[in-house]
Length: 148
Image (cartoon, rainbow, N blue to C red; front, side, top):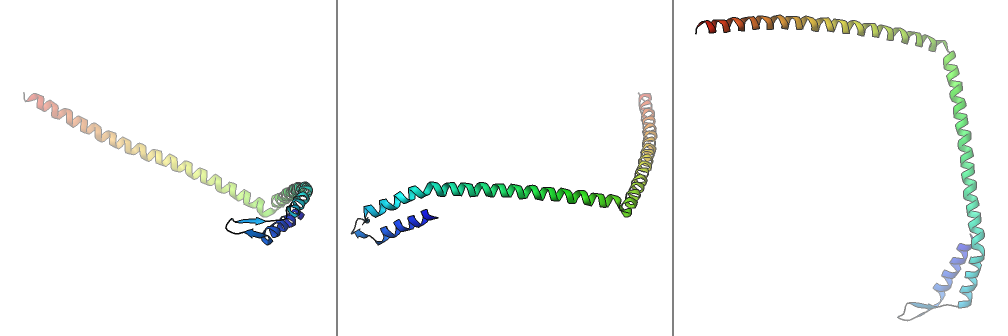
């Protein structure tokens, strides 16, 4: 960019200028520096416009490339899906999967029924034991009441 070159020129003028001892200041040719600043002011708007155009063009190109990539990905996905659906091995795999799922559901149902029956049997046994215990407790209370 021309503006950067002009800024380098100003820097060279300042670095090449004579310095005032103990003040940290430099003596520069006012006319030279002002001429360069005028050139910067003239060139800066054009370079800013050019940079903005480049940025917008970059964004447009990126968006266009992204759209093309998305379209290609969708086309490839559709093509793959069609190939998979048409393939005989896939059809057989679907059938086998359905068969396995059906068997698994049947087995799960049998297991639930068996578990329910087992739990019911255990609960009946506990109930009978509790009734026996309650009966024994009632007998013991009656015997205690008879000793009064």
